[in-house]
Image (tube, rainbow, N blue to C red; front, top):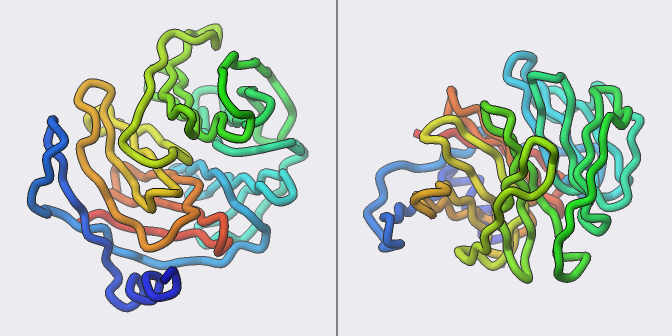
Length: 248
């Protein structure tokens, strides 16, 4: 089944987009995601990705060897950071401090590292639930506020204070699980990825799910976005690939 869906995505090159109203009702299709290309990664189990538009480079987390790689736009490794994790998941770029925020799922930790991989700060996030259903995503808005995503049991969207304590948290239920997220300055929204639902959601803190993008496979574990160019960058934990889509 997975191979058939993947073949369809390659040949057709588009993924249908379903629109949701504020109340969650299905609407008519208005846009589509177009597959630009896929690139094989030379490391295993990519589980998070961050994008630097100024340099057109990525930082990609490997859940296999627990390393973080800086790559070019085709996934070719430019640098291996000297940080080694234990259960690495999400990653976000902090352009104001030229650093990266990463999450360690089982340890319930948010870690700030410099662009060489040296630890600048680490904070334990007190969350209940199974250790292997913990933190999966991290994002940061223009004001520097950090948001976290908990995978399931339950799914949670968490906003932190400036001292990295929990400000607010809410349970979310619109997908089977939640594998990563990224903040988009357009409409102050988030794009939230679900591995088990094979879908990408545009979501607002105030309005909930705004759009749903169906994806051709399971195991999409990381997402980054170039909001100005309407491009999405996804990594798949099973195929070990970088997928690039455009929204038109």
